[in-house]
Image 1 (spheres, rainbow, N blue to C red):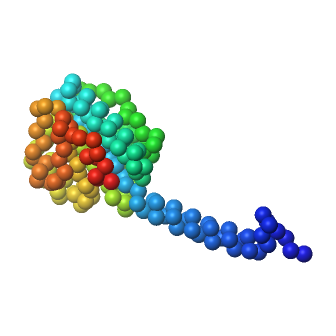
Image 2 (cartoon, helix red, strand yellow):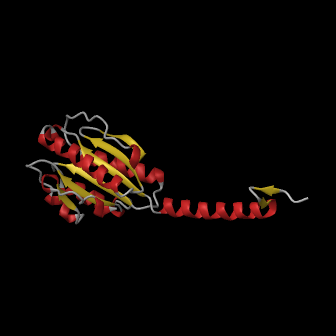
Image 3 (cartoon, helix red, strand yellow):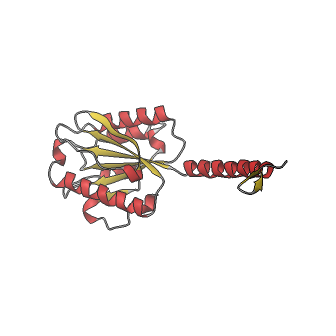
Amino acid sequence: MNQYVFGIPKKQFSLLQAVSQKIWNKEKTVENDNKKKIYLLLDTSSSMIGEPIEAVKQSIKVMIAEWQEVKANTEISVIVYGSIARECVRNMPLQQFSLPHLILGGLSFFEKACHLLYQCLEKEKQTNEVLVFLFTDGNITKNNIINIQQNDILKKVTWIVCGAGAEADVSIFEEMTKHILILNTLTYGEFQRFL
């Protein structure tokens, strides 16, 4: 006696189910392969107090809005640095992301942020494209740039440097990336082009 599932013979239904599962798994794999990993490196040293950090906060709000508008397939992590560096958001899906409360103060040790970023990337064995948005007012040395260029993992990521505040000096980064933005002059849509 034939058995039916939703009016379809059970044997045919099982075959359809198997084919559907394969298609779904393939689509899921393609989706994961296209996922971009985003790191936001935020300078939270004393020099960022006032206009610079407010420019950072507003720019990140715009960035998230732009990406949500196009339903970007991204995960976001946040590393903050001053005298120390720490990861305060890890692999947050875009739709759930909100910027954490930022505590400012101390000196600006960019090299500590780079070391932590290196550890995160090495541990996660990233195979998808990684974008690193660095928000800073500057205070970077030539040695910082050289260390990035000589690091096998850090030199492979796409760096986007975002100068914060009227006094921002990020010209030194021209030696390692062509992607330099000045937050005070940004127009809507500029963050979308990196997806």
